[in-house]
Image (cartoon, rainbow, N blue to C red; front, side, top):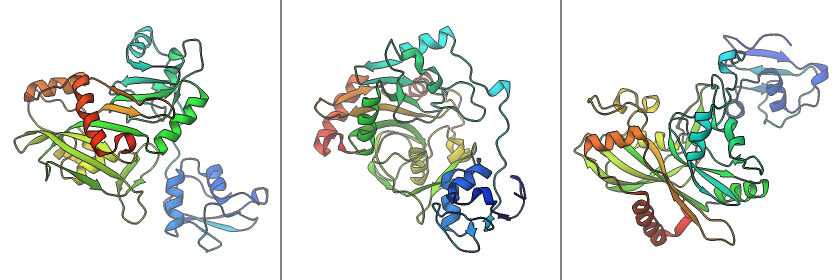
Length: 345
C-alpha cells in the first residue's frame, strides 16, 4: 500500500490482491485503525471516501486493483509507554472501591463512581474502573459494565454480576426501563423553570480528542428533561436533569444548548463555564444522583448517590440546601409515578 497514516491531503490507495473481498470498513480498520467507525460513516455519507470514484457503504466489498479515496486521517495514537500501561489498584484503591458500593444483589452492583476515575481505558489512561472490577468478584464472576459515565462525572453506575444479568440489564437500558437523574450546577439563568431540550448529537474529532456537537443532518435523536431546583440570582442555577436518551456527552452539550454550560465544563462551555469566585471550584459539577432499574419479574431498584466533596463544598459556599439521598428518591419517585414511572429515560 502506498502512502502513510499522517497525510496532509487526500490519498488514493490501490487495493492489494490479498485484500480482495474485504468489507470496506474492515479494510479501513486494517490500514487506519485510528479512524473511529463513526468518523468513517460520516466520510461515507458525505462522499469523502469513495471506491473507484463512487459513493459506497461501509459494507461494500473491495476488489483487487480498485482505488479507495482516503481523506486526511488523524495520526495514529502514540505507542503505549510505561506511564500509560495499566496500573494495578493499591490497597487504598481496593478499599475505596469496596466502600463505593451502594447496592448489591444477585444481578447487579451499583457503585458511587468518584469524579476523576475513568470507566474504561484509553490513550494515556493508566487506571480505570474496568481494570479494577476483579476486586468486586467476591468469589463469583467478574462484574461487567453495562453503561458509562464520563471520567469527570460522579455518581451511580450499574455493573452486572453475571452474563445473564448483563444481557437483561443491557436490554433494560436499551428499552428505556431505566430512569436516570442527574444534578448539575450551571452558569447562567435557564430560560424557564422546567422544560425539554431536543437537539440531535453527532460525534466528531479524532480518538483522544472526541467532541460532540448538535448536527441536524447526521446527529442521533437526543432528549433531556430539566427542572430548576434553585436559582443563584442570574449567575447560576441548580438543575435536575433526566436524559430520555443516552448519547455521549449529552447533558454537557444540551446544557450548553440551553445557554447555561455546566460549571467546570471548559470543553463545551469555554470561559463561560466558570465562576471566578473564591470558594467555588473549577471541577465539573455534574453528578449522577439516582437511578431506577426495572427488570422483569421483580420490583424496581432505586438508588441514590451522595454529592461528591467538590460539589458539597460549592453547595455550602452558595448556601444551597442539600437533600438527603432518601429525600431525593422519595420526591423523584413520586414525580416519576405521575409521569409514567421508569419508562422515561
